[in-house]
Length: 455
Ligand SMILES: Cc1cc2nc3c(=O)[nH]c(=O)nc-3n(C[C@H](O)[C@H](O)[C@H](O)COP(=O)(O)OP(=O)(O)OC[C@H]3O[C@@H](n4cnc5c(N)ncnc54)[C@H](O)[C@@H]3O)c2cc1C
Ligand SMILES: NC(=O)c1ccc[n+]([C@@H]2O[C@H](COP(=O)([O-])OP(=O)(O)OC[C@H]3O[C@@H](n4cnc5c(N)ncnc54)[C@H](OP(=O)(O)O)[C@@H]3O)[C@@H](O)[C@H]2O)c1
Image (cartoon, rainbow, N blue to C red):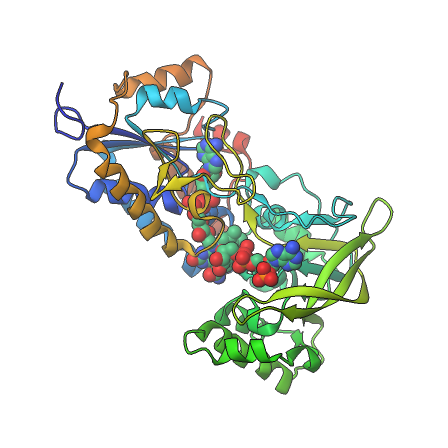
């Protein structure tokens, strides 16, 4: 038999997940010297993962990164197929994929949230960031959620860039949001919001804040929004001072400059407020069935510079609120038949090769954990592909490499997969609907809408 990766026998690769890491993996394979044919699978009827369903809708410039992924698909149209609306683990198993592909790459991201593990966390009115972010981005899984935006005071736990996104969408004037690709039905709900104050709660101090300069600075640019910081929260201990003085810690220096500027030049009189709170850890969520308050504990930081942990002082603070968003990090979920580390929510691997599963690889957030921007996934996927290519001679050729084999099994099961050219049609219609409404696109948010359009 011709060797795998030759013209006579192209390497057949399945990439599960068509988010950034999946597309960077495809890109690296297409740029390699081998002959390859790739099938990309996604459980959603639309590609691009968190670029479509996570990245903030008022950051359209960032969304334009999608053009790069489109070029990967378009430039390799004869050796790339996309199967949208196919969930691996439900519609087809990993074992089955191994019959049709010589190598399988899992690039499934992190699909859920970390939990706080405090009493009251499951009360109505407490949500994970994945839910709110998915909702305002039109992700089909979250369209039935009803967020009660009748509360004036909302609490966001965590101070990463996702928490910043969530807070910004809650306070930004509706006329600004109408220029984004937030779906119209969701805009109409946001338009009735009574939210006036969002408390952005960090368990550690300003030097350790996880957000980045541009993102925290953006609050100051939103019309009608005051950024409130208790000046005493800005006092830092000697270990934090030495973190700040560290020449390599530009992020903390830039963040501190912005935060100090907010304290020195407070804006007053806006109709909404973002209260940035430091050194307060959530200990309990109170209320009957529904949340009515959150109890926070004032923290001290202990430990060496760079490794300081928050430790409760015993001093408690109660905030009345009817709506809480936990934005403390996304978390990966297990795929049947694939090793999984529950604690980190990742798939154990060596340089991208899944431990104990020959011929299977991993890339992106499910490999590294839920950290890093879009571009971070490029070197991550490139490392995985380098490992795969180094394994080439050891890979066991799959038993059914014909392109029609996987289609046959999906058809047999009644799976209505969506092709890449069908996605292009959806994309075009979404943009046309958007133009009519004066926005970048009007998304379809339900599978049945998409299938109806496709006929
Ligand atoms: C709210 C939010 C905002 C962000 N904003 C920015 C930003 O502004 N700028 C920036 O640079 N980075 C941003 N990021 C980070 C960026 O989105 C991630 O680095 C990147 O999306 C991770 O890529 P991924 O491919 O690993 O995962 P994902 O983007 O999550 O893609 C995974 C894909 O796998 C699919 N999938 C999952 N399970 C299955 C299955 N069983 N079968 C088939 N398909 C499956 C999913 O549907 C999804 O399409 C943001 C992240 C979040 C959470
Ligand atoms: N505009 C952008 O570029 C953009 C936008 C969104 C997301 N992203 C990227 O996407 C990645 C994920 O972002 P993220 O915001 O989800 O995660 P993140 O940056 O890791 O932030 C998580 C936040 O949650 C806090 N936290 C964790 N566990 C907690 C607990 N038990 N109690 C209280 N607080 C807790 C963390 O505090 P500690 O530090 O104390 O752990 C931190 O403030 C990041 O790399 C981010 O930069 C980028």
